[in-house]
Length: 223
Image 1 (cartoon, rainbow, N blue to C red):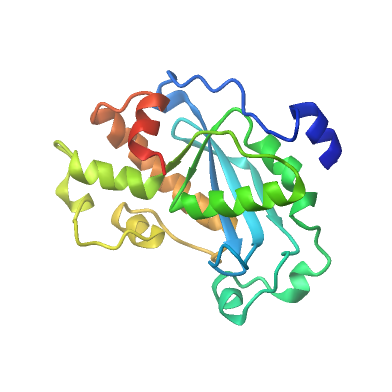
Image 2 (tube, rainbow, N blue to C red):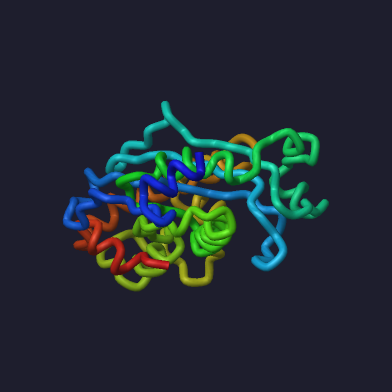
């Protein structure tokens, strides 16, 4: 599987062709992603699960999610297990990240990637892709936290209730602020769904603020 992808995309460099950066925000393709990790130390931790949802404009495509638990390449800690609730017994018979990477990359084809504090997810994905010979992820990406900060500074006539400078910027705090319901277990797919709903609201606000194309969005939201 890995070798076939390596051959198809040339040297393992996975490109995401066909992203027209002049596309309007409300009709463009997105993939909203989240990962769960053994810990936050880039040097010694690794991915435990990956969750992702496609969006077309503000429409979240719930009928075809991507969610995979993998066997991490490093040991899970009790602290991380408390956070993501994925246990050793759930991962020991799962494939390593190399077993799901092709499917994940295909899921992301042709779309801008969206996430909250996404630099962390992208860094771990890049580390794993390099380790297993998949090159690098070429999709443009934006961070909902950075987008929110931009809107806070350029909010125009948007309601000030959404942009209190002293508020916490973590995903669930912003979700509450923007009336996104948080339900179910804390896992990569659920967090991707919360992020997608947050981004859904942001798209409508961004258009009002003159951010109309993917190129505009990348300019203000690139991690």
